Image (cartoon, rainbow, N blue to C red; front, top):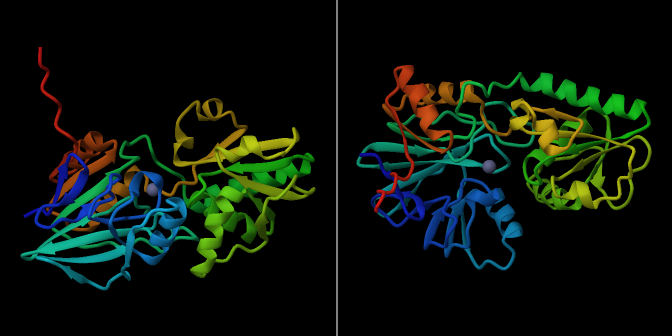
Length: 323
Ligand SMILES: [Zn+2]
């Protein structure tokens, strides 16, 4: 029987007190990765070592007991066997496979099918029931190959520098900023990273990820330097007026994003799978039942059913209207 159910605190295991990416305090939660909408001040948390380190940086003062698991090393939790696998989303991101009485349920957390430079590559996890995130679960979200996006990032930076301006890439502080920093450094740019993102770079470095050519932004960037900053940080830094800004996100495929973000350019460097990636992943696991969650859950479930995969959205049932 499927082992993942939805309750008022979010997703949890049916048979044991194990929550999945709960945001409210729980006795024990699996944390798929350290983005804000997946972490909480739990009594005890299961995750990879990078996830638990990033989470404690983000939730300073939390007294959560960390229980770090390695990918591919199963443990017993009461009647369950649980095992983590790379999700390809950010450093340390993990899917969890929960097995009970021979039935294997996988919860993906956020996942990325495109190969990133700063995250462990996604592993396809065979299962009977798949609970999959649906952030970009609509057909209009199709991203170009990553190397094409990388070329466009480099071209954007080169053009801005040639015009005597500072190229400023705006990226989420954890995950996207590290990927952008690594990409730009590999392309030979000198990169200055906003402190809010640099603290995450330092944790990445403690797990062996290198950032060639990059350092913390401590003052106005020098001529020839490229800046990686966060949506919040871009307004605080004294970057002057001679900037050209580029927002890095899967949402870049939405028309009007440049206007909404107030940037000169937007490029779809995504740490989530696109629509085709999600469909392909659901098929590759061989799951006989797919439950969609987060984001466009209803739409992705419908699209999967249209492709012959038994799928439904795992979302709270609508409240009864009382009058
Ligand atoms: Zn995430």
